[in-house]
Length: 224
Image (cartoon, rainbow, N blue to C red; front, side, top):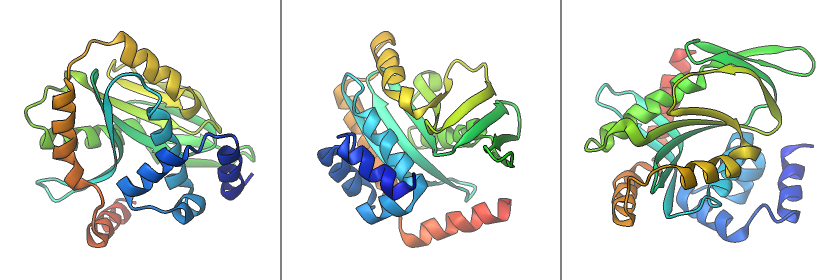
């Protein structure tokens, strides 16, 4: 099933909630055409939608571009600010089998046809995103800031190993249950006022200019 048919199927199944979709477009500047055409954007949207099912007060930011003091730009998929903490989320809309260890530099994706692909360790990738957010929110402790990597439900996390208690690697279809457990069973650290304040601090890093996005692409290409 291609991305267009997946999109139509989910919309028909009422998983594409119009009010949330409209809010996502406003937050990101993306359109329905972008959602249909780009597998990564589509996966990010599904994650965004699922986060709305978490109980309690929260705010969500998408596609943050934070330029750090060393000139490096961090592109952050989603930041979920909740009473229980700040969840930095990296969305990977991959298929196949996934293998990796939190200390590895690269992980491996194995497709049904046997082809293997290496990709940069998403835990490490998201750690830099977490650091970038903490730099912007310098008054916060990192004890209630969490590194969450969300893979598509189309893949199997065959052997993914990590020990950090503030890190989680999960499939997207279990995200609603995961977040519900996290938010119901974790202590509350942030008030509604603090959540709104943190959201306002990070909001200017969304809706990045084409120039900043291109600068980030250039940096990413040099790393390949």
